[in-house]
Image 1 (cartoon, helix red, strand yellow):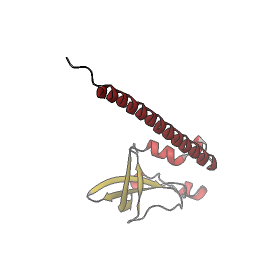
Image 2 (cartoon, helix red, strand yellow):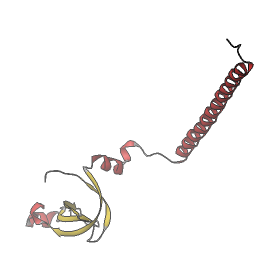
Image 3 (cartoon, helix red, strand yellow):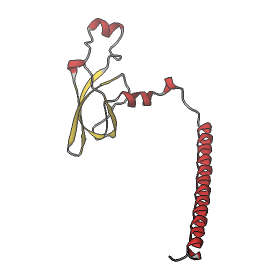
Image 4 (cartoon, one colour):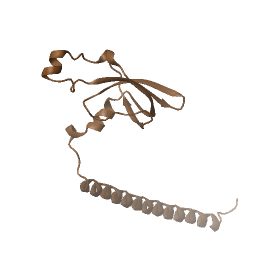
Length: 145
């Protein structure tokens, strides 16, 4: 019927040219992103090299976090001594060894908002233990006493 217009041939050329330009644009963008990622990786490795890493056996906090059943940010609402779970210190032991090394047992309640958690802990020697009103991140483990 009608002969093919030269405009359609030209539009195909323009489409091909635009596709080629878009292809090069995408390749350049990917190259820039690859360079940026390599720079970030290198700077991360350099930062780690400046910080001395601790050996796996000397990571007590990481081991405690891994062994916790529940990690809670709360305030110590109530604490009281619980004699039932302490080892008795007889007269002979008191005279020979003393009773300072026997851990003291405590019952406590942690509170965050309306939630409460009853906890039980031991205090060793003269080390400080939490007081009522102390806020902390508590690592709770469930176990038999």
